Length: 180
Image 1: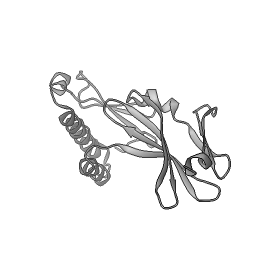
Image 2 (image 1 turned 90 degrees about the horizontal axis):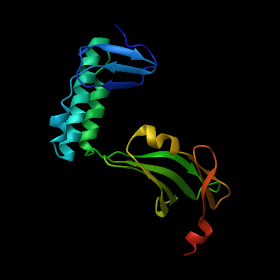
Image 3 (image 1 turned 90 degrees about the vertical axis):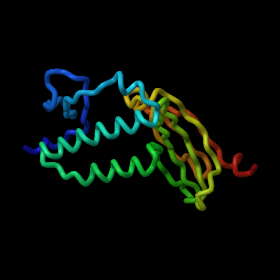
């Protein structure tokens, strides 16, 4: 049995009579596995992260067997998460300035207690010349995804930070910053 194309998420649930069964709903493949929330909340933060990773990884291995998926991509990601110590920092958007002297990035830090979004500008030598917190939100993708916008160079020294609705959130003039 192959997993249908287009399914993008796997959801683990609290215990119920559908234990071990799968169910399709839109782009979500639900896989019912028992999870002991009481024991989970007794763990320290790092142990919680490890427990969640192990739970997800073991469920994915079961699904690999059930749907004949390759295990290697999941094992690689599992090992990478451990190697990086559960740090979840990534570049959401990146744009070079028109004169190629600067690179602007929207950088996301997804922590267990918050989601921080920054705008960062580096020169061509990767030296940071500007960094500013754009927003902080709950660490829930349904909360922060709607706030993630875009960046656009208005000219060679002016970066515009846009909200998700394309309205202007901020404008950064590098001529003032670099001159300091």
